[in-house]
Image 1 (cartoon, rainbow, N blue to C red):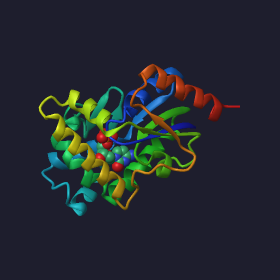
Image 2: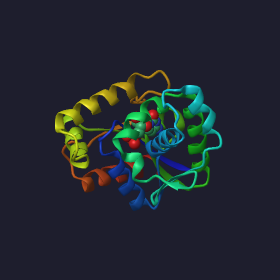
Image 3: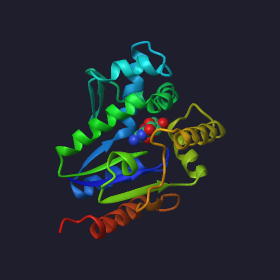
Image 4: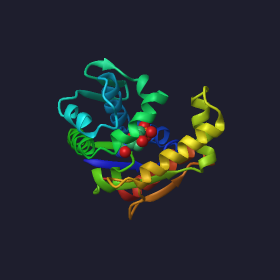
Length: 216
Ligand code: DC
């Protein structure tokens, strides 16, 4: 399987670029952040405390998750919109720091990929942990200001300073957790999205792909 791994912090623009690259190459696309969000959604829906490691771990094995471009379902319930809510965004950090959750979702990501020919997978630990043998690894970044502006446009109920502070805080938690932190791995290519158009970024990734990963 051919894998393009795209890691980077919240609001870096990786989803937009990842989806467009997948469409251009005819590859499948997996949003692993949506998987962590779906687990957080399931925990809240069952009345669990997302910080309660054992309780969240106990529900993960038989949790039915379906994450695709069409949307997200959790145990058959549509959660496409809810997983983007501020409540889930707050609950997802402790869920993503739960080692049992990470092990199980990593297993599911790998299993998903075995059934594809080519895929673009985005997250925080895709090039470092999930697919260390990915043919192309991208580390997508943008300045905190640009990322806060993007998120602010999506979340009209928060002011810019609050959004910027929340992003900085979540970055810090994602980078400093002991289990699969967000890191820039050796061999990854930095893609700064601060002041390039989506089309330019997609072209750049396609060029990198034809150098790095094209089947011989
Ligand atoms: O990209 P996102 O904001 O939808 O990610 C949601 C959360 O999941 C975020 O706090 C980081 C975490 N995450 C992770 O730990 N590992 C991944 N591969 C993807 C996301």
